[in-house]
Amino acid sequence: MSEAASEELGYEQARDRLVEVVRELEAGGLSLEQSLALWEKGEKLAKLCERHLEGARERIEAALASVESSEDETGDSQ
Image 1: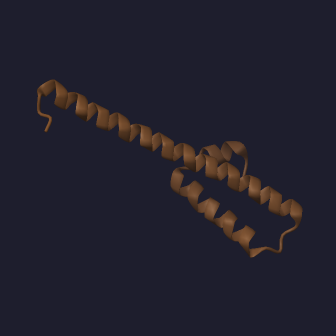
Image 2: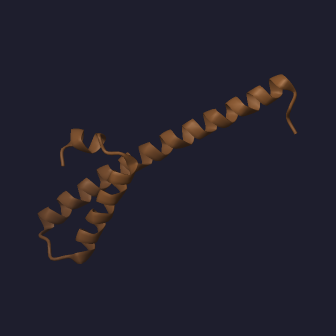
């Protein structure tokens, strides 16, 4: 999988591919080079998942801040 192709994956796709990589590594029977290549692929997928999660976290925080801001403006806070 190329760098550009991995960047196009959604969270669920990246997570599922990461699970596949882990299963392959755990199964063993690979050469050192194959294992290292899979490990590197897994690292890229894990970082992509982290970026997706961070983006979701930021969107949630922005939405919550917007709600709190509008409550403050209208005086409807509890």
